[in-house]
Length: 386
Image 1 (tube, one colour):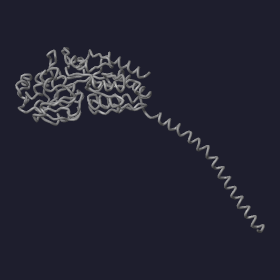
Image 2 (cartoon, helix red, strand yellow):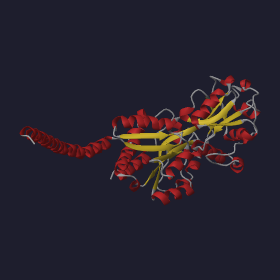
Image 3 (cartoon, rainbow, N blue to C red):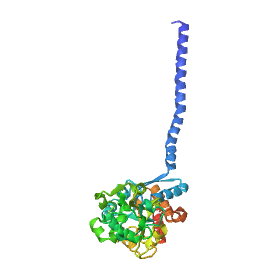
Image 4 (cartoon, rainbow, N blue to C red):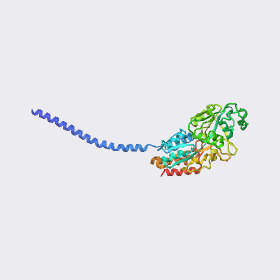
């Protein structure tokens, strides 16, 4: 081999060595950066996760929907690290979701039955049933001839007779007798009844009232979140979804009547119902408060068996509206929630008990709870905040 060939070979080997060394240098230089990036990534992910708001998820009654929407808006505007979602699917579904662990809290217009309470206790230990808001159920109607006239007066007995199908027409003598001022305007039209189609706490409260005032209703129809309405079988009854659905259908159906929570009664005639003092009263937040002013209850007790509604329906305050009721929020014992959720619930409960009860934060159609109940909710918030 010539000297020139040897020289070329040496140059090639030298270049190869340089390339290899350069590669090693670049690899070793990048490795710490990659390791550093790898070490930083979990920290960045952790920071991003920590910045995500805590989600409180609830479902249930349509009765308090408007109030909960308002509270959620006010509360989360200053508590930006908490997000609250509420699905107004009806009390029946809300109870099911809560017992099955699908939600952080459940809502219903009536307390858990003994069976439901035992199911929940078997899963979660202590269960809290918190009456956090008051409302009333209005009997509404759409009679075009009575538009802009004084409210129609009904006694509990006449209301029951209408719903049992004993009174069929708006100009029935019993209705005319109670309403002499508009008796000549009452039309000979059949009364059509709109009720809830979903499992509803509003229905449970309304039918509880009908059973309270009428032994015949109690025996023939009874009480429940769903019942067999007599007017359905007579071709004069129809169901609608939620308070919104009932209100909408009554507004669209001349000569119909129905029942809705107070927040949904706009745009319809509202019955003045005779109370236990013999006075005809239309529902209002003030009159609801009078009916429920003596409410006091242990949140961990079997509230269903206490039959609080009968005490409310039976009030003798002359200005009280009889079909009034608290609505309930269900919570598991604190140890069923992780720390962040528990502390978020503590702040949510504190808001409900304090700022939430202020007049400016109470939505139209609702009434604040008595002070004694607010204090108990505040104590519960402190328990969750530990």
